[in-house]
Length: 265
Image 1 (spheres, helix red, strand yellow):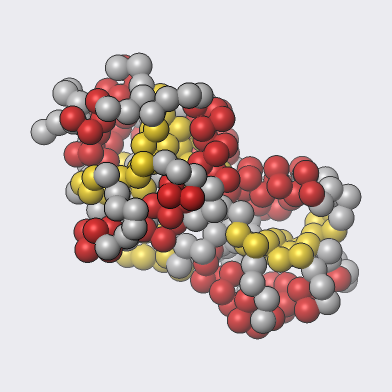
Image 2: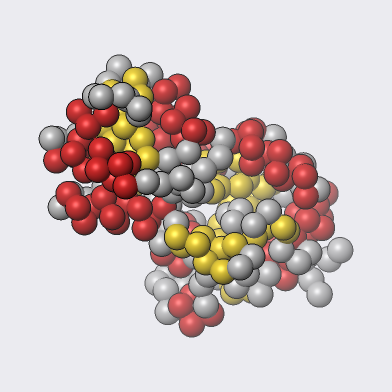
């Protein structure tokens, strides 16, 4: 499987998962074969995801399930970034979390006492807000009360949506926006478009010419720009070609699929 002229010029790739490698767990056309070809040629790959719903090991299992070999070191998640940040800056404090059990474990593993399900939830020192399939009004109420009392306010990302087979579902950013609107506070964002996930991926990949591949302008391309990295966009997710062409700095390439970007026809 021949490389594209673009891929030949890079030593390593940081690739988003949702919308690039898969949609709803189903691989995008040719993605598995293209990733295998890239690695067979000795080029390095890391995956960086803004999806906070699952733990790192869950993403590794999903990659293996579709035929992509991966280790824990290959996958950089926003949940892991939250854990790292909290462990360094807020260990020993209390937290209320809007998110999945996996995200609550990340917060607890950072050394915070998670107050979800207790009478003290609205008095937490830190509120972490992320996407959740089980959001209820009481989550928003507890988060808003704690933030209005002075809690630190962290969000995993501003993704308004994420791609699924039947269309675009509300993302973490939709829930973060609801809490911001009800409190008048702006969340500190941990994931993309901030550069932390890119920097963590670079630490794991090592030195080399790096290309970030994503499917969103406002998160993937923006995070690459914040980290000073080249970026390319694929059209299997949410962004359109017109949006990508209007972004500054412009992506080095726009392709229909990840496979089309990395390998030749």
